[in-house]
Image (tube, rainbow, N blue to C red; front, side, top):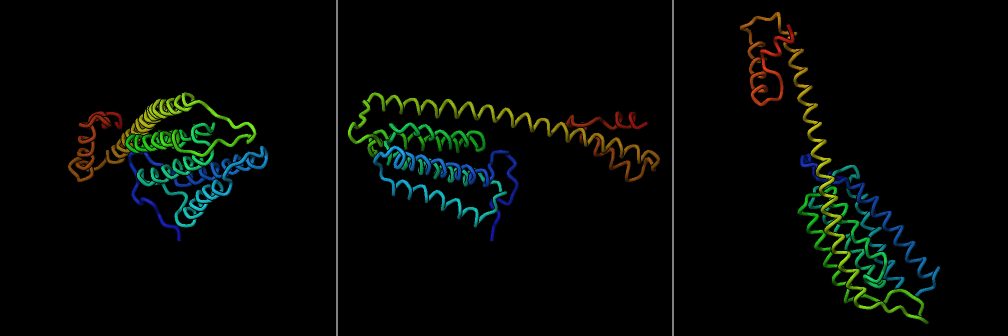
Length: 251
């Protein structure tokens, strides 16, 4: 039976729905399968087709297991979401290892998981995922299968080109990750400020109506005493009008 992940509400706003990660992984599975089959069948290039399909199948099975085991509507805690994104980075890195390493033009897809983390997870998780992606890219410079190409005219890219791709990938990880985090953080702070303003307005309207309803009550009664205590506490924090202001408005 489905179970909840993280029953308590995550108040920081830094979380992501499980359904979002599952849907994105399905898109990745479809895209990776299509690319591998087009290269192997359509272009007739040699590559370890069965190893590539096995790696893609593993990602598909993970999606199936998540959908069966958990509820898709649940919001993941940051550490659990980070583990799933780390799996996506590792899965893509293995595919790149089998298909040419950083010579493969799809190597820049390593940015995807880090970008998603920057917009949905705490900075600490994004830094860890970025470091993991950078480590995978570094390994792929030195260890990888040949890039699928025409066997009669094998493509040999110079080492300086591979270093340039590696450096550009690292710079993109840092630049895009930081700016995506800044934009998301500003939007989140604005949303929280608007929500707080709405709560204060609702509280002020509630007290105004309460003051009108208790205007005819005994001045020394418990209702008036409770109202004045709430008004004094809220006015001290600057959230709503003071007791005198509410009474004047209600009169």
